[in-house]
Amino acid sequence: MPRPRVERPNLPEYMTWEELERLPEEIAEQIELWDGRVVWVRRGPSEHQTFTNLLWNGLRRCARQDMSEHTQHCWRVTTETNVFLGGSGKSDFVTPDFLVHRCLESPYQDLRGADVLLVGEVLSPSNTQTDIEAKKGRYASAGIPWYWEVSLAREESAIAMARAYALETGHAQLPDGVRPLRAANYLVVGEWTRDDPNGVEIDFPFPIYIPWAELEY
Image (cartoon, rainbow, N blue to C red; front, top):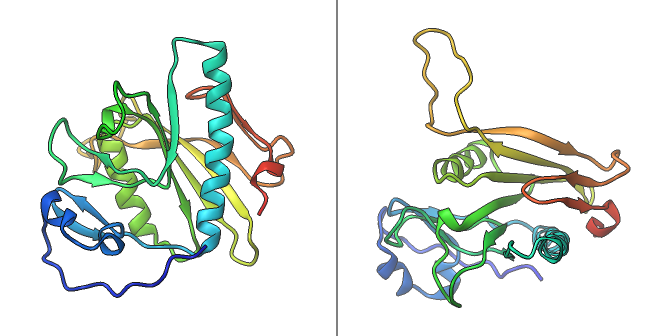
């Protein structure tokens, strides 16, 4: 079900988590705080929610299979959950469309970047490359090992492509005098379209196999 459109109020450029909590829920859920700066989250069409949920379902099935075979593992798969960056404080957070994290010690704990194994974004045609790269950079800087991008088709309700990225453990060799823009970056390690008969298949961060039939609208 598409979310109702809510007019954005005039807010200060920077806010604290405590100030954000005092906003109406329908406003607050559209905002991320990047080192305290207010960042409005672009809301996609109803297909965005549909494919996010289908991916959640496939990843959850694979996580449960991995836990049944390796009882020392404990994973949780969820959607649209705030991930707080840094070791303390709540005024720096991002909200991935779907994610996998390690089980926490007790219920209702804040989820920190160090707890997260995989984050993913479902990209609608309206998403800009600038927005995508900025958020990806925050995930990388937080040290989250795996990042997925799932692009939706422009002319039909379908997934056009899924990509898996792994966090670099060291920098590639660059020309003398050239330095990377960010301290950490992702590299593409998997790419799938509907032309791939086996669907989405990768062995990391645990064995994942999601046939296209599970990802149909």
